[in-house]
Length: 226
Image 1 (tube, one colour):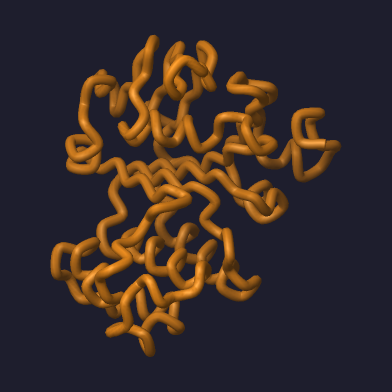
Image 2 (image 1 turned 60 degrees about the vertical axis):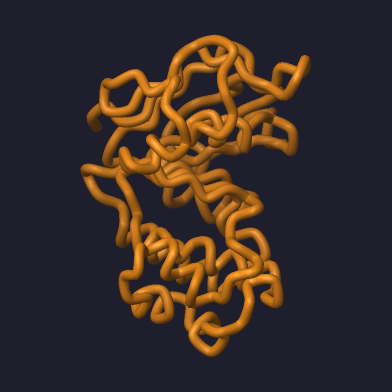
């Protein structure tokens, strides 16, 4: 797997509180990477650092071998880095169709409605009227419209029914490609463990364990996940 998105010696936090402590991780092209850990481990903060919405106080972020630490979220998006945060992740006052038009720069939304049929019947409803799971489906629609080469997904299955989660992972499977890296923070560990090429477990802003998905699928979970 070739160099993709690299986090090197990163420190970051909120105000005086540091939540990531000298953290270094590699998200190589061609891989699905799972970020696991208990609440407060720093998983979402790490995705925000990668996506440019949380600045670092030390260290660097590189993409395809180029230092992008100082790049804005807009510049990173233009470079192919797609961040879908836990929330807010949709435009609440816009309709489903308007959100998808914004995500896809006017491209047809047929693929999104095929993947998530529940959205098709609500195309003209404001996103604010959707359930939490429906909003999550809407946010994930951008994967099909403008996927980019680095997909950063924070708790993608939150609020989704089991059948919809399975459809979501089929979408991710279709997007899995040698020129793309997919990074997933997930609450349902077994779903992502059996699909991930690489797994990182965080604990209190530090790396607690790293390995292949097959290692966790076949053995006992690291202490940081118990």
